[in-house]
Amino acid sequence: MDALDWLPAIEAVSPAFVELDQDGMVIRHRGELNELFGYAGDQLAGTSFISVLHEKDRPIWRLVQERLRRTSRLSPFPIRIKRHDDTVGAVEVTVAKHDTGDGVHLQLAISKYHGHLSLDVAKRPPSSKAREFKLDDFKSLADRLQRYAAEQGESPVATLLRLAGISDDGEKIASGAEGLWAAYKLLADAASEQAAKGALEEKRQLHEQQGDGSAATVESDGKEMKAAVRSAYRKSEDTNYVTVAGDDGISEAEAVKAAVYAMKQAASSERAVTMKALTGGYERRLEKVRNQLRVFKKIVVQEKFDVALQPIVGLADGQIHHFEALARFDSSFYSGSPFEFMCFAEDVGVIHEFDLAMTMKVVSLLKRVRRIGFDTNIAVNISGRSIQSPAFLRHFFRILEDCADVRDQLSFELTESSQIDDLETTNRILSRIRDFGHKVALDDFGAGAAGLQYLRVLKVDYVKIDGIYVRKALEDSENRAFLKSIADLCNGLGIQTIGECIEVDMQQQFLSSIGVGYGQGWLFGKPLPVDEALTTFLS
Image 1 (cartoon, rainbow, N blue to C red):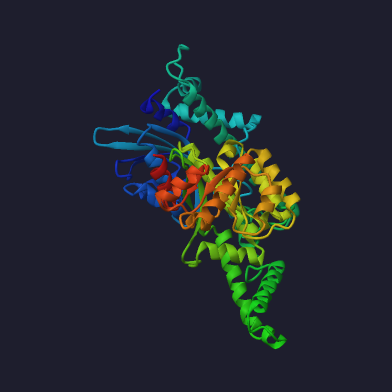
Image 2 (cartoon, rainbow, N blue to C red):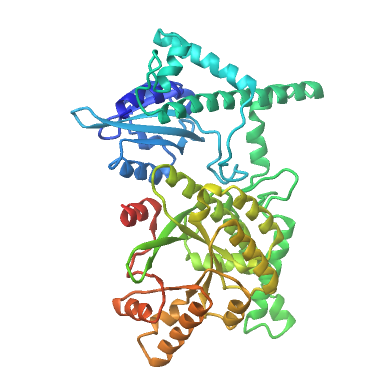
């Protein structure tokens, strides 16, 4: 079944259908565009399709276009849109291309996406578990089939056979994989519609029973709840790991952390030799910290950060092994360096909030780029402070439970920027992460005095040698001997090594000669936005 034969099937099972010309402009459309996009079909006609996508997901669309250079169709993938009223929604898109003679056109089957792509509403990344269907779902499917068959002037049985790639005399005319997907997709959409209707009706009945006269406001309840309490990870019977509450968005516990941090700053000043000097200007310092904390929470909750990817390569063959995920912030919210941002979050005691947000963002990214044909491995940084936070671990392991489809592609780097108090407990936590199937690296090895002690207790898969030693490797024999001793120790323990901050060929050659397996640095590539990194290094 080629792309053209496949198009009627994907068009049939989706509420909306759009065709784009070679310039990405909408030239043909049908279906529920107003419901999905907030635009009538006439409003979309003649516009660039990428212009209706959420700006943070336009890189995903550029990856789709890159992938379609080498394939004729892509299976369903989710993407966020920006509706006409500026609200954000999500749709699932299936794409096929064909050459019209005037250029390559893309035809998109579009339906509502029932998972979550935004941090402010997501309980966890979309599940990979199979959906369980109920009798009412099949009844809804039958209704949809009848409506579609009537439009096509054929029987529902003939429609279903055609979608499954089987002729009416029982002969299999093509691979049934696409047809089976089409039938499943039809049933899944019908089930989602049934679930949404059932939930809404149940909520209306509840309001009617309560007699509070609020049944008419059921559909807006979600927005009101969101305005009251927004969280990057919400669970009704548990504490949110990010909660923007109150007038200034800072909870009482966080206000205490800010006060302690401000006092520590004051105490570390050279002028703080008397109580008067210590307390002088404290309110001003505290307000500054509170403002920084407000900015931090907005960045996390409103997802005002993006992922940049830097490659880590095999020193022997120069092949990409995996990428490290690095944060890049919206400059209108934060103009400082990422390092300063992380140090502040660690010192105040809220770094676990960002670590969870970053983990969820990378998990979602891995799932989505895999759907469009980019299989890659990404490492996420986790602070030593986060590992010691029960609240972090509770939510973190819930995220890992839902990563079965990308488990081999997701690894973690434990940063050594803050002291780990309980190494034995930390080792048990790392062992559990590894038991899930994720690799673990100890980052910035050698930067702190406790490095060897960490290596003695913590069981890890990789050690990243701090860049300061790599930079000095060519300066004198003592630095070279130190690096070789680290490489020998790790190799003896069965731990792979990664050299950081490699900038010139001689550094690469030396590290490779002493047994360091992998390298990271500007010699191999700077951190790039996701679409640029994947197309540059994996195309």
